[in-house]
Amino acid sequence: MLPQSKLQDVFFTALMAFVMVYAMICYNISLNVGGMQNFVFLAAFQEMIIMWPIAVVLELLFVGKLAQILAFRFVTPGKDPMIMIILAISSMSVCLMCPLMSLAATILFKNAGSSFVPVWLQTTAFNFPMAFCWQIFFAGPLVRNIFGFIMKRLHS
Image (cartoon, rainbow, N blue to C red; front, side, top):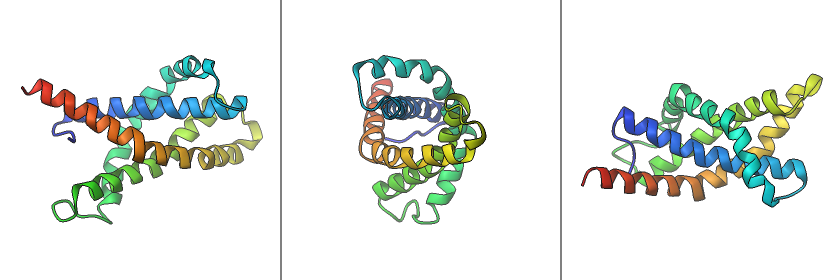
């Protein structure tokens, strides 16, 4: 199930951003410390306080609409299967959000100094495959199922 109102869209976006941002922060901390360790799961919540609201605001104000516009250059609502519409929008969202969130992380956490652009580009390059696969195969289906379950409960 997909959002049908602005309120539902805000809830869906907040939930999706939480799942995506948490996983990506865990991934980046793991890269920084040389691998996944138990402490990463809790440490990620320190950055979540900053990065989650950034992701929600970017998605609601800018990325969500632009991702749809870009996706609808490849697929047509009402003509193409719903899964293709979902995959196109999700793909475009990652293409937009990954560089933007990598930019935010570079500014806030990387201390890149005069190597700012290379550090941002490297961060984006490292994050993109993870963000894409996590969104398409895990976060997207999980969040759509949770959202659908909650909406059915509210309407019954």
